Picture 1: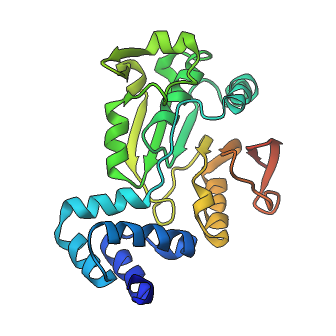
Picture 2 (picture 1 turned 90 degrees about the vertical axis):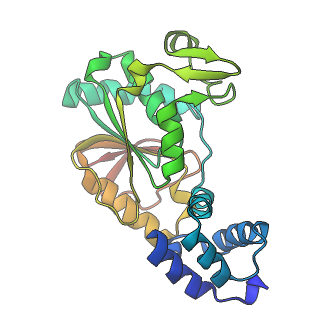
Picture 3 (picture 1 turned 135 degrees about the horizontal axis):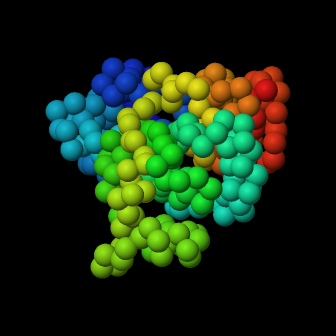
Length: 260
């Protein structure tokens, strides 16, 4: 039933209602995911689903949560974090000093920004560290602020940092307040909101793959503008920036790009 329904109108309704532009996402993939959710709610048309999320706050939150892809863990791809700690951080500190401006974009449940704080804490005092962490999804930001994680999420955290900054609570692990204090969480849509400026490091990993080529280019251009001269963009292991030179970047290492 849904397949023949008016998806174009649905996209417009979602834009008006949630300010999310579904045109920026790969259609086949996104449409399949949305159809699954709608069917799960026992609904057979896009119009009926729009009516539901318009009047039911919980269903609206469920929809937003479903749209945002949250696969997160601390120190994801540890070998890349070694490059960050061993090469990128020392260079940035040398270039910009100890008060680095770091943005974790599409930060999901907070694993990434907290990892950044812990990794950097080995090189500069905690009091100097400030990470801006943003995501489109209110619910994951609430989870991030809570700072409670399962065993699997924190599996790659180096043992010394785990001992220092985590406390076991039942079967979960609570991150310490001193790490939490270094991160400022905010709601932000990569496609339509204003980007922070003068960043020394932007981390945005395994998110841009869900966007169309046009949307990707636009995001990378905005990241470029957001970075200070000589600042670095750190992307995910599932991503490539083929046209990085055209966008004004130099490739430092796989997954690390410097603003020329």
